[in-house]
Amino acid sequence: MNDNNLDTQQQQTSSGQTQGTYQTIKSNNIELQIKKNALIQQESPYPKVPQTRKSEKLFCSKCNAPVDSDISYEMGKGSYIIIFILLALIITFFFAFIPCLLNNCKDVQHRCSKCTKLLGTKQFLFG
Image (cartoon, rainbow, N blue to C red):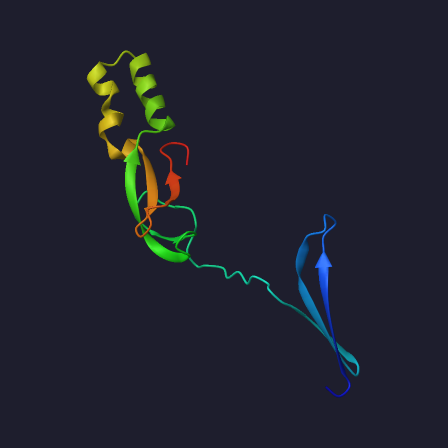
């Protein structure tokens, strides 16, 4: 190469670990530095955590793709607090356990439809 100088160097952290390889290209008055082995992260237009209590399109970090979430309902803190409040108000046992039967009183778990990884939980009362 004519008057181009190529220098390759390893950058290290204070603990001695290699961060990556840098290549410096010098040509006349221009110096260009290129980092090799760098991960390029793209922002996904899909959220990584659930925003609603309905099935929605979320980004799965395991599949590395946007997927439609499968939802399931589970008893959570909010459901148990409602049961305790209804029991404390001396309402009949039947009415106190209504939160166990209604999906609107339960937490919603969003799972990936491909790999079944838990993507997030939308909580009843607290989130």
